[in-house]
Amino acid sequence: MLRIENLTKMFGGLAAVKDISVEFEANQVNAIIGPNGAGKSTFFNLVAGSHKPSSGRIIFDGEDITTLRCDHIAQRGVGRTFQTTNLFEQASVLDNLIVGHRLRTRSGLWDVLVNSRRLQQEEKLSREKAREALDFVGLSHVENRFIADITQEERKRVAFALAMATDPKILLLDEPAAGVNPEETDGLAQLIRKMKDHGLTVCLIEHKMDMIMGIADKIMVLDHGEKIAEGAPEQVREDPAVIEAYLGSDDDAAA
Amino acid sequence: MWLKLAALLTRPATKYVFIALALVFPLVAQNEYQIYVMASAFVWAIAVYGLNIITGYCGQLNLAHGGFFALGAYTLGLLTADYSWSYWPAFVAALAMTAVVGFFVGIVSLRLKEHYFAIFTLCVGFIMYMLMDKWEELTHGPVGVRNIAPPNGFGLVDFTETTPIYYLVLVFLMLTMWFIGRLSRSLLGRTFTAIRNGDELAQSLGINLMRNKVLAFVLSTTFAGLAGALYAGMVRFIGPEDANVLHTFDMITYLLVGGIGTLSGPLVGTIGIVWLTQSLQFMEEYRMILFGPLLVFLVIFFPRGIVGSFLSWLHRRTQGKAEAAAKAQQSRDTTGRRVNNNA
Image 1 (cartoon, one colour):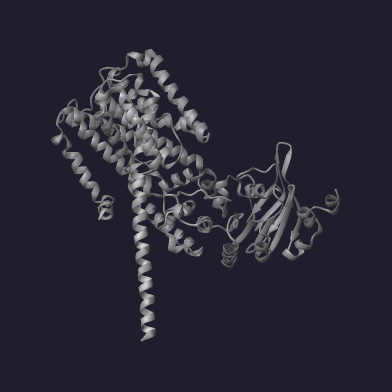
Image 2: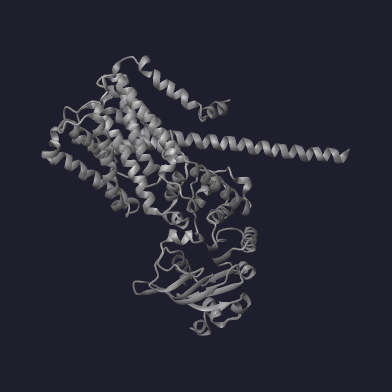
């Protein structure tokens, strides 16, 4: 589904991501973990096209997307959420979501001027997609509320719904459970599992280990921009390199 | 009661009441001067609608807007005064000119973000002012352009009179509002709003940033050009001072007071402030003493402007009522069941 070959990103002389090769299978939940500054967010930015890699290739669904612009990558089915999502606070939840399906529509200025049939159909479709996505994340009851009036956890779900409305094949979630309480974290984990059940491929960055161990099919561990481990949760948990990255080695402890 | 009255204001039919009011205004106005002030307020409102597209909906603070207004006015003025074009062909040329210049300024300036974009456009506006002031062979320099043709009435109407020009400007204002209304509700308008929420997020939704920003910019400069061309035909004398950046800041003030990113905000803000300025005329410069604190008050307590704050208030109230009603219904249902259980 998503194959990364020897991906490297240099910022000046510093390698934020160094020679990473990995393959993410379709219809699985893949987690990327690692200490702060390990290059996880940079890795996402490379896949989504916000940064251009210094070298290496990104193959999505058999197509080389390494040099494509972000909006074209999104059109090919890569959806993403951010750690913080800026939405239009003084507009309703539904109004914020309608634009999510814009990339699958074609209406331009001329359609607006003559109020074309295509525009009307596409607006109807976008509204339906927004409702569908809202229903999927379980927020149908707040569709008319202002974004400013909903809770932090509901905002996270709205951000998921916005990414879902683009009809993605793969979803990149950047710390989806940051800043919500343990109970709500369970709810979000269930939602991610539901995405997988609906045939989506999920990639997520997360620090909450309990959540990761519960939902991930595969974990990739980064440290200082390099991949230090990869595999099923149980495997990664026992890996000495991972334990060292997180807890420091005996040598460090002695010093 | 208040809520119902307020909700009435947002009904689609309400706009016909306002159109009717605008139509009868010249009949009830006390003198010609009032009609003239209203007509010039409408002209400024058209320009503010343009500013609202790029700054209100799309979120890019464009400080060259006054420059584009003057560009439209100068294109029309010079073509009719020096090259003896008649008004309407020059009018179309003014729109085309502001659109084309807007396109080229747009593709360069929109590569910059946030304050860098604002600073760049501030400079663009100033360059336009300098050209109008210093390029004397073309623009007559500080003397300005005289003998600008009035809109051609084809022998039916005389647009040098105040009342006919008032109605002409009103027609263009209504066309502008009709278009902006349609734009803001469409997928294209939503695309602009998504860009205002953040470049990164908009791109992740598959939106082509540059294309949409340039489109919004060209639309906004074209409306500035439209307003400038109407202004030149109405005032019939223009000078470099019309490109002064102060006019841009005036327009931003109208937009902020009325409600940035709202449909009726630009009109409410422009008419409100123009009339307030007029009625405080007797205080001369001292009116700023009243004006300053008033603006500060508005920005602190109504950050979304008069219209924006009103709409938020109304939405919250109706939403709150609907939810309370739903809850009441629910509790009634549960009490009902309890009664049944008891029985």
